[in-house]
Image 1 (tube, rainbow, N blue to C red):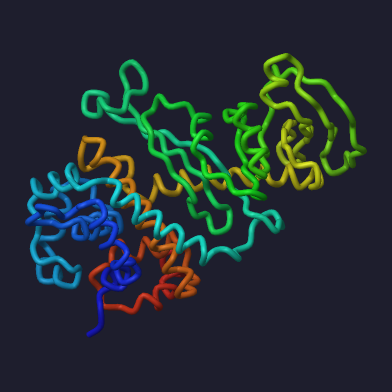
Image 2: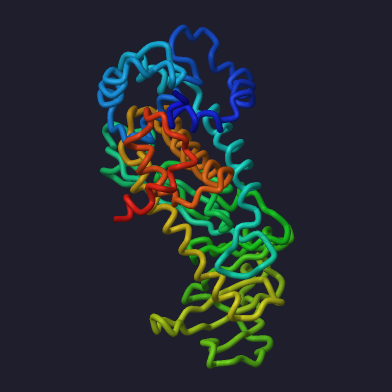
Length: 374
């Protein structure tokens, strides 16, 4: 009869590595029901089938009781058991699993094309805010009467795989993530002007990485040299500059490159700042334009993953759910690449959402592309 689609998806989870991660954190110590692995299976199931509550999960599993064996589950966990597991199983276990899956996915997408033809790693850095109720999530303060969490994300533009994610409360400013962001020499980091901190950017420069960001209106600088430009390509000026002011010049003591660009499509004039002096100005502008892929990523995961409604109120429960959601996203992206499926991630998730218990070879999922598109 074959295996269910859910069982086929779960085969791509590195269970041996996951078992070592669980052992390293003592995740199953004293656990009698619903192990860390079983919790991941249920959370992945809830992501794929768009379950919105603990009751929703329980009802759906009860309706498919005869098929639980194919999920790797022996029993249907009670809502209270599932709630306790979300609060008590260390979220770092699922963070480590997500990191392991991300490494695997990035290897698979290492040769994926980008919108900019560049033989280097390109990352887009940004953060998105998920609003919460302050009375229920008091550990995540944001404003006077509101709670929130932020997902600070470094997106690898080859394959749209998140290379780094940090979850914080809503009060953490985006620029602070630069203090512990992994820096790769030779890579490009594309950021908006909210990350314009010259001390931190100089640390990135000294690490051998390149950044592309936008200037703030009140930036105090002086022009050292102006390179010739082709205004037909939208480049208004291409300048070598240095910062004025005692403190700013100490924070970034070397020259910077300032490019003024007019977008022919929107008519908007943008001013970029970078430490790369070799690439054409048009390439710098194209790199910054590719930053919008991280905005699309945030929009996509908010629409297709369950990360806006949480199954528990504790910090551990929220982070566990988010890391399981990210793991599910990366797992499907891995399956798509390893099996060379032509269907989009959206199509794969749509088919799985209604067919997880069907005994269909996952390799035939692309045939549903025209159906779901219609």
